[in-house]
Structure formats: C-alpha cells, structure tokens
Length: 216
Length: 216
Image (cartoon, rainbow over all chains, first blue to last red; front, top):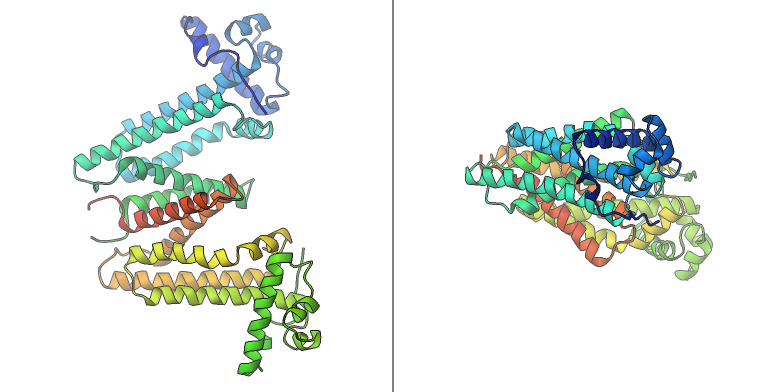
C-alpha cells in the first residue's frame, strides 16, 4: 500500500515554542499508545485528541492528517534511538561492553515499541512509505557512523587492526540482524527464553568478531 | 503431515553385495531426478523403475515403499555431505581457508539438490518425519565434531586461544545459518548476485570470528 504525507518531514516543528513542543510530544505519546493497541487503520485523530482532552482542531494545528502523524511517530522513535546509541557510546565502555551493551539497549528500547511494530506490520506499513524507509535508513546510518568512528579511534590507539571500519561495523550489525531475522523465521512469536537465547547469540557473535580465536 | 517408513533406517543395505549396492545407488540417483522434477506426491515407484528399465518388483526388493526410498535419498545426501566435509578437512587448510572453503563446498553441494529441497519443502516433508530429522541432525553433529576436533588441535599447537571448541563451532555455523535464513526472509527466491552476496557475508563473518579485530 502507499502512504504519503502531504507535508515535508520535520517542517511542522519549525515554528513551535517550548509549550508547543511539549504539546507535540504529548500528541506523539498518545498516538503511540493508540497505534500500539488498535493499529493505524482503526485509529482516528479525533480519538487521539479525546485522549488528551483537546479538540481535533487543536491536534490538527500540529498534524494535518494521520499520515503526517504516523511519520512523525516513527521519526520520534528513530530520533530517540539515536539518542540512546549516543548515550551508550558516551559511557566510553570497552569494545566488548559497547557491543554487548548495544544488544541490551536495543532489547529494552524496541521492547517498548513491540506492539506498535506488530500493528504497523499487520497494517502493511513497515516498508510502505519512502519517508518511513528514509527515516529508518537515516537512523541506521547514524548508528553505523558512530560505531565506525569508535573503531577508527581504536585503530589510532593501536588497540585494533587496520580494518575497513565501515564494512566491519556493517558486518557486525548485519550478523545481529541475521540472528533476529532467523528467529522470525523459526519462531515468529518467540517466548522470553527464546528471546534471551537470541540476545546471547548476538552478544557471543559480536564478542567473537571483536576478539577472534587466534592467538596471533 | 506424518511420513513414516515401516523399516528401520539402514536395515536394507545389510545383505547387499557389490552389484546390489550399485543397483541401489542407481535407484537413489533415479529417485533424486524424479523427486527433483515432480515432488514426492507425484512420483511413483513404477516410474522410477521404468526410468531404470527394471520391474517394480525388482525395485521393491531394495525399497518396500516410497517412504523408505525418500528416507534413503535423504540419508544418501547426508552421508555424501559428511564425505565432502571430511575431504575438505583432509586438505589441512589454514582455519581461514577451511571455513571459507566450507561455505564454497556447501554452495556447490546443496546447489545440486536445490530443486529436490524446494519440492520436498512444497510437499511439506522438511520437518515431517522424525527419521528425516534424525538424519539431518546426525550429519550436522558429525560436521560439528569434525570442526571442533580441528579447533582442539589448534589449541594444542597454541595457534588459537583456550576456547570452548563445541560452542564456538556451533556459533560459527549458527551465524552462517542465520545469514541463510535471513536471506529466505528478505528474498525467498534469490538471484545469483544475491546468493553471491550471501556467501560473501558468510565468509566475512567467519573470517572475522577467526581473526577478530583486536591486536591483543
């Protein structure tokens, strides 16, 4: 299906003061709650406005239509994710702890949006809009660049080999993603134990990629 | 669906002389050709006998029913696969070349049975029978044990760290499998380019796991 916002991404935040920004954040939070429970098709702007005890007109001052609201929800999540990545990196952890910490952070971060993503997927929204895809790709790229920068600084310090940092980071993230995909294939609705096994595998795989097995 | 052979696995080969063993191999090869083209349900013992210009009775001397023939086909493939693994290991390659060679060998080996596996899957046979599952598990275990033995000997020689060889081999093979699963998820009918990308990723991932990125 196609799903196009009539407004360009980010345009609507430009003229907001602090009060407006807080209101906008409240709308996004309310939208996430509604969308997580009822999906995109069954959620109306009126219901979200009712949840916040504001008029539909007040809500539409921030979001002209459902399409732009859904896009903004996903932009918010992507933005929040990058904030989490930056926070994790600012801790100056060892490479081992950085990458296993990334698995843990992703677990708790995406756990919060688990139902939202299931609803979006059921509604056919995951790869539908070029805007949504662009938002996801931007977040992934920001994460890759941040991790590659870290590897570059390790090379400068002589703690890691002269590897191609971009392709190495990509391979490590691809490996984590491959385990996640393969779980969707073998058990589409994983138990808590199966999820834990997934995270353990992701951690062990990246640890092996960092440390290798050879003594050199 | 359930699919049970009435005979115990391997029982039928016991009393065969060389000529009988050759005939049995011819039957299995003919069965693989038929099954690859028409699937399990649409293949009859009579057709396979016709292909070999023998009577159905002569064929049934070796295989009492279709179930035992299909089981034997998969046992033959599993057995052949282990022979290929052992051949590869006998070359005494470096660890890097052993694991990238394993990716290449799997490619050419399973490429030969590509259509057979698609037909079996379409017919619902992949995980249907406990015998078929047991055969697959046996082959996987034999491969794991052979690779773990190799890692043990590397530890003795001091070329690799004191790792748990069983879990390390399992993780490396799981990573290769995860990339293959994730390809089935993202492109169920991959192009030759996409397959090549899969093999490259599998190779790069195991190479990184062997060599790591740290200088130590």
